[in-house]
Image (cartoon, rainbow, N blue to C red; front, side):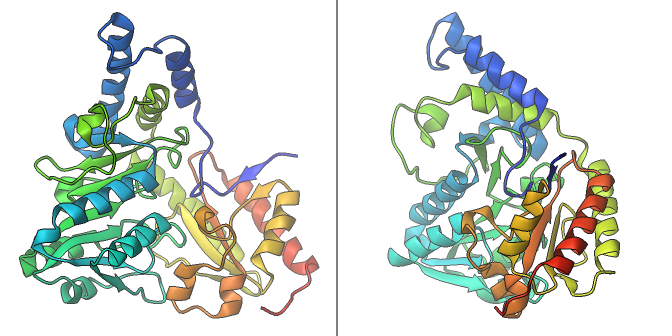
Length: 379
């Protein structure tokens, strides 16, 4: 039975280029990049090549890239580091109610430390209105954090409006963008977006798990969370995982041109929307202009967990929302004001460049069969 993997927003399979690079570095260029001998120098060269690749993908300078263990650590370093570095200039933090848990839980901790946290609410399409930033950002705001693409419904957030609001209020705020779901899919230019900090993750773009990066704009100071031997310019000290970092660089270099791949994803997403809309009881939670890599839908009143198991038995893998939520009711859909039965039956499909129209056709048939055969229970 062939497998169909439509859960790429949770994680992706490692691409051949990244896997080969990881193995090469683990077995051949295995030196400590801080060592002064040839093995250490070669390991340092692998890191430099990866740093250059990530920087180029962001239109940034290599010195603005700090390697981390992934999106969660990048978000934590950015938020704690920015808030604590600027606490003497204000206590107000603006974010949204639909951020990733690594942002929401971090600002909740900062709230306990005495910071004021404003959480903007989305509309029924999962979008934050630009005027909400204008109203929320005040002269004592020191940090604004907003994701570029929501990980559950794919809504694209108005990062530029957040930057405008900071400028209009003459606030000392740093702008942090969680770009984990956008990196490799949209063309990202943090300087053009006026972002001071930007988080990306490797395992969303076919690199290994356990590696990511944080863009820190040149000239921006944030406080480190950990202290050690000075690696990563003291921002993330500790012996670097060179194999994973090199794998991230290889995965970035293997990425297709974003605009061309975006067009193909629009076709795949559009096909699924057309076919699924013919099935009674199916409705879409992702807005029409969402990132086409993500399609969130509610399936006819059948509990999501029940449908997930049904599809899994057929080798089709989707999710019911963020993998970090581990099956709990989606706080994103709840914030969007959706009714309980729609939230409880929600499925998230998320795609990669390895998915095909044939797989989409198979999914549509399987969902029809599931809706016809599964018993509906009240929510």
